[in-house]
Length: 179
Figure 1 (spheres, rainbow, N blue to C red):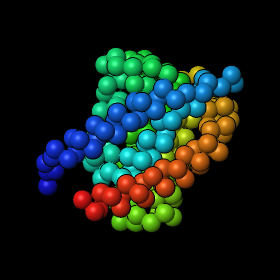
Figure 2 (cartoon, rainbow, N blue to C red):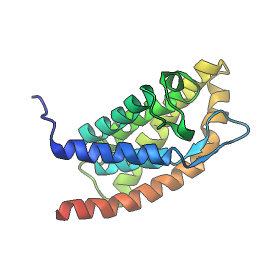
Figure 3 (tube, rainbow, N blue to C red):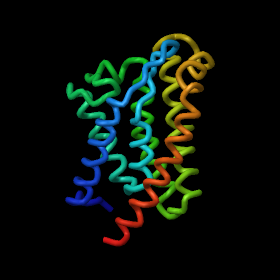
């Protein structure tokens, strides 16, 4: 069965693609890692908790496509296909898969615990596995060092973002259900 693209799909996906792009400018560089702290993972978790799997995937695909064609939507205003092929590229690809997995996991369970668990599994574990693996491959530092420099320092902040995303998503889902 083929899914028909609706105006709602386009609007919701565009809105979350915009939010992830804007949160890419919320950046804290780390001197010991080629990967900066950004607000983008928060938007990935929001997309997964609020949107359908199709909409979540479309929003992240739109974000990646915009960045690849040169619009400065990647963290710190970066753009271009070279960014996806660089050290942080795996995290960006992880965002696409993570948002879809979060949405699949939270589709039937919109409880706080269900959404938080989805954020942890899809938005933290999956994104960091893909991101660290890519970082280790691209920089030739190995998976262990890539995890230590490219993932471990970010885990406490990502857990905080998962809590924030769950709170915001709980409110948004109640409002969306009402309309």
